[in-house]
Each structure stands twice: as structure tokens, then as C-alpha cells.
Length: 141
Image (cartoon, rainbow, N blue to C red):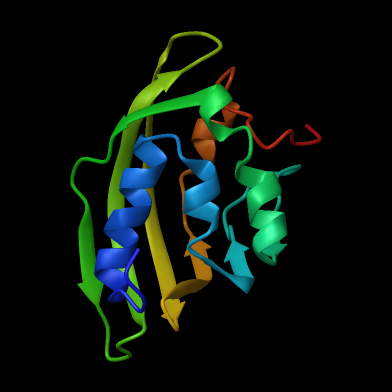
């Protein structure tokens, strides 16, 4: 990965890594002190992850539960701050446990500092968490 990739390019690269199920390289895109937030997280799901290791632990089993096939309709909006982008997208695939189709919509506000994801606020649809087999984070529900 080239140093200091522009935020939109870094984000698109991160999506390719998720589709490749390459969680270690996806986590490597994060700043050591990066923060991931989920303002709409349902009860029992994490609301805030602090640090690359917390993000890694959260994502570690993602491919065992959700088999992503595509991110159709990715729209990346630049902001007045060159380090901040707003992303609208949809993730599509299947739930590994049940084979059921998986589709989720997302809006994310992403800050990139020194070529790494420093802050990621993910406004994902919490209704997808109710699907059997979607709980890759091991929530306490």
C-alpha cells in the first residue's frame, strides 16, 4: 500500500480487502489509536472500539459469519476537510451459517490521518443484526 493514499482511494482499497476476506491487511490500514464508532448499534453490540487491536478483535470472525460478495452503489463524498470523507454504500453477500442473503446499508464518516484510518463512524442499519448468523461480534444478546 502506498504511503499516504488519499482518503477515497484508501477507503476503496479497504473494501477490496474486505471482499478478499483479508482482515489482517484491512486492520493494518488503521492507525494504532484509531477509533470505530457505531451510533446505531443495537443493545449488546459495541458502540465504540478504541485502538487497532480492539478493531481487529471485533472484525476477526467477520468472514466466518458474513460472506461479502460486493459493495454496489459506493458513493464517496469529499468534505471541506481533506482528511474526512462521507461514504454511502450497500454491502451484499450471504450469511455463512444459514446461507440466507445478506444486505446492509451504510453511511460512514471516515477520517484518515497520515495514510491510516484514524476515526470511522459507521451508521449501519441495526436491523441486520437481528438476522440469524449475523452476529459476528459475539454480542451479549
